[in-house]
Length: 345
Image 1 (cartoon, one colour):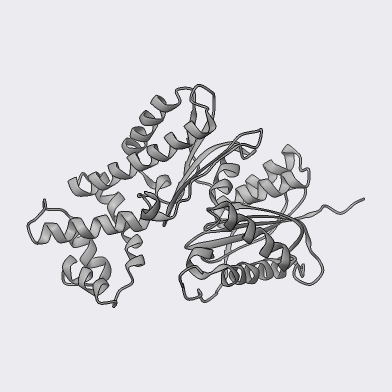
Image 2 (image 1 turned 30 degrees about the vertical axis):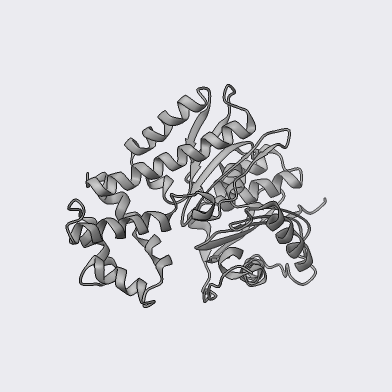
C-alpha cells in the first residue's frame, strides 16, 4: 500500500503563525503556533526563518525531519504581506529555495480564510485582524485583489486603526474637545498611564510603540456592545470599511447578480456583535443580493490544510477529517522569541 503523502500547511499572520503537517487522508500529524511572520514587519528572509523554525517543530512532533530530506509532497503557504503580485512571486521563490516541499502554493493569508470557509477557495473573503484585507477568487481563476498597504492605499479598519481611533477619542474626551467616553479609562488602564494623554505622549516620545494600539481593539468592541457612543462610532466606521472592500471585490469579479460566498473573518470580525454584523450583511445585500454571507471562526491554517489536500488530490473524506482534527485546541504553542520588527526592504 502506498503511504499517504505529507501536506505542509502554513498560515503566517502579523501576530501569530500556525503550521500543521497532515497526511493526504486528512489525518493531522502535528500543529504548532508561534510568533508573527509578516514579511512587511520583519523582512522576507527573517519572516521565513520564523516559519522554518515552526516547520521544524511540527516535524519533530510528527516524527518527521521535514527539513532534512523527508520533504512534504506539497506546501500550502498563506502569509500576510503577500499583498502585491510581485511580493507573492518573491515569497514563492524564497519558499521554493528553502525546499520545504516538492511543490508549493503561495498566496496572501486572506485566501486561507476563504479556503477554510468554503472548502474550495472560491468566493470573497474579508479578514480583519491587526490589519485588514479582502481577496476574491472564482472557479475560472479570476482574482480580486487590493494592495492593502494601509493608509497610503486608502485602507482603514484593522486593529491598529481601531486602536488609534480609540486613543484619539479618549484624549478628546479628557480635554473636552469631544464627548465623554469610557474609552478614556480603558486606554489609560490598559497601558498603565495616568491618562489617555499620557499614553499619547509616550508614543510621541518613543517610549511606547504605536503598533501596540491594536491591543485596544477588544476593549473598543466590548464598550461598543455596552453602548458607548464613541466606541460605537468606531465600530460602525469599521463595518463601513468592510462593505467598501466587498463592493470593490464584487465589481472586480462582476458577481453582483450571482450566488457568491462572502466570508467575514479574522479576530475582530469574528468578535463583532450581532447588530454590527447585521449592518455589514445589510450592506452586502444591496451589493450582491444573492450572496451567501458567513462568519468564519475556524483558524485560517485549516484553509491552508484544505488547499494542500486539494493539491494532492484529497477526497471529501480527507477534508472532513482535517476539519474535525485541526481545531484551535489541537494547535500547540511553541516557545519562541519573536524577532524584532523592522521596515520592509
